[in-house]
Every structure is written in C-alpha cells, then in structure tokens.
Image (cartoon, rainbow, N blue to C red; front, side):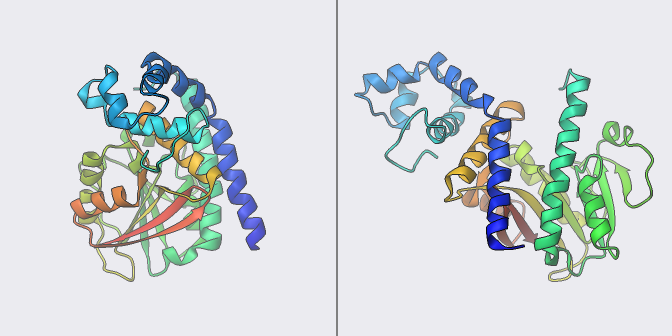
Length: 289
C-alpha cells in the first residue's frame, strides 16, 4: 500500500470514529455545565488549573480521576482551550445486535489492515487464542491469512451460546478470562483492556501470562490491539480521547498512554514489549515474558 493511500485510510478511519461518537461532545458539555466548570474558570480570571477546578466543584473523591479526562476531551473538541499539555448490564437486545455487528465490521477492517501490513506479528505461532473475541471475526481473519495457525475464541458462555455453527475454521471456548485461559502460543486482546480499570487489567494479563506456553521470539506473547493515547496528529488524538471518554462512561475503563500501559505490564510481570502504530488511532502491542 502506498504511503499516501495508507495515510488517507488512517485519516478516514479516525474521522469515521469521531463522527460516530460526536454526540459525546454535547454530553461532555452538559456535564461541564452541571458541574459549573465554566463559571469556576471564569471566577479564576478565565484560566484555571485542574487543582483549582477540583477545589471548587462538588466531585466525590472516587470520581476525581475522571476530571482530567473530561477536560482533555473538552479541549480536543474545541469547547475549552489550554496553554499547558498536562491535561492529560445491557437492556436493549436490538441495540446489542447492532452494536456487535458494528464491532464485527470494525474488526474485519482493522484485521485486514494488520494482516496485510504487519503479518510478521504472527510469525512463529502455531496456535492463537482470541480472548473476548465475540463472534470470531478477528480469529477468522487471522486463520484465513495464516493457515498454519490454529485459531480459537474464548468468551463468556452467554456469548458462545449465541454463536451459529460455522465451518470449523475456528474453535469456540466458553470461559472467563479472569478465572482461567487455556494454554496457547499467543493471545490476542483486541479492544479488551480498554474496558477495564488497571487492577482488572493486571488480573487479565496475569491469566494470559499463565497461558502462553512458548518463549520469544516464536510465539509466547500477548498481542494487544488497542489505543495508545498521544498521537501528534489532531484527528487521531481526537479519536483517542473520544474513545477514552466513551470507555469512562460506558465501561469504567480507559484508553492509556505509553506510561499507563507500561505500568500495568510491569505490575502483571511482563518484562518486554514493543508498540507499533497501525491504523490511525490504534496500535499493536506485542507483550513478552
């Protein structure tokens, strides 16, 4: 793929993401108004630091870590400005089907790109387990591209029970990633860890560490496809912080920057990793023991 075409694809992917979740801008603005943030900033002379704002609004202690992420989103959205870079159970089955279909389509787009441009990630692997892999879109794409890799999907029993019988290209395993993960050469975590807080991520990665059975460079790794916040490009950065706000609201999770990823990797006992940006706001992280 030519560099110009690749850049256009990345920008289009980020723009589509931003448009899909553009409603978060009005929700974030409403939240800021309800918290009286504009008046607080005005009362501090038109400029206020995060400690200034926290001192003047009624936010419970356990919710205070969310404020920097809200402020960062408001800045990236153009609602506020800044002069320091420090800002740093479902009840609708029909919506659930549409949402999962959308995730599946996005998985195919992202994995088609990853397979075409970064296929070396799967070198030396004979078995792979897509943890939290849902309908198997990711695992199927990998299995079709690399016939020597035996691909399986691990997800909750309620998810696996809804999977229609297929062609046997991938195996489906009912389980819980917090309790046990079957042995495998490599594990894929695509759009999984951003759903969870740091403590839960460490628990998930600890189970991954127990499951991978061979050593670097041939297998023996966790392949994470997720956001690494900090793109220098405005469109990409906006997509990243938009996703962060979405995770904060719907799952209590977060999108992480390099330092935050490093922290959970070290706490879960992994010693080596590398990060490669792949498609706009997304990156591949290869995590080794």
